[in-house]
Length: 176
Picture 1 (cartoon, rainbow, N blue to C red):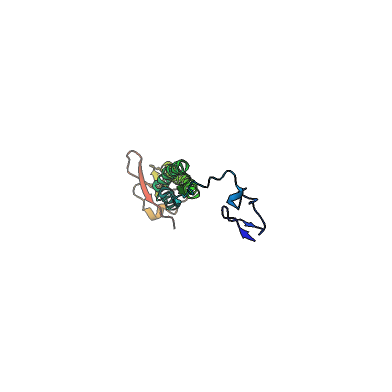
Picture 2: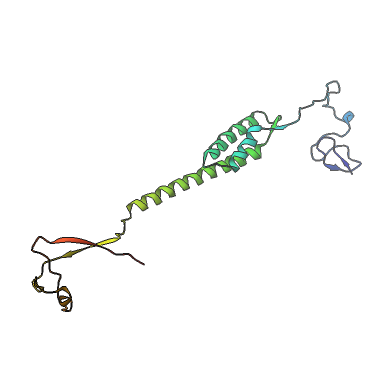
């Protein structure tokens, strides 16, 4: 077994043409090959810096700001990679950064919406009073000269107040 010099796939030793890339292994057999032309040497591919930055910002979303940056840089990286596919790589990182960025934006929107909902629910909820108002009225059953201890022994006795308008007294009730 020997590797193809063009695609590096394993071929049989007797093969004269690669079955994967369809190239001739012996240049003298290839009629389309121009022997006078120098071989085409491409510069090594580099990873797009915006793709790396997009992925990093997507992972560390920092309350939605990093997610927004990840989406913007990811789309810019995809455009650069699409314009120079032979020079730039990193399409997978750019796509991952865009996806993580959109998930971060969605998460930030859900956190903000739930915070607003809880804040509105808390302000709409009526506050439970810690005190209760009790209204005392004038009663004819208790005489002005009678003692209070004697009046408390009667079951239907109301507290006697001076002849004025009824007023409210606040008693504090503490729930234990």
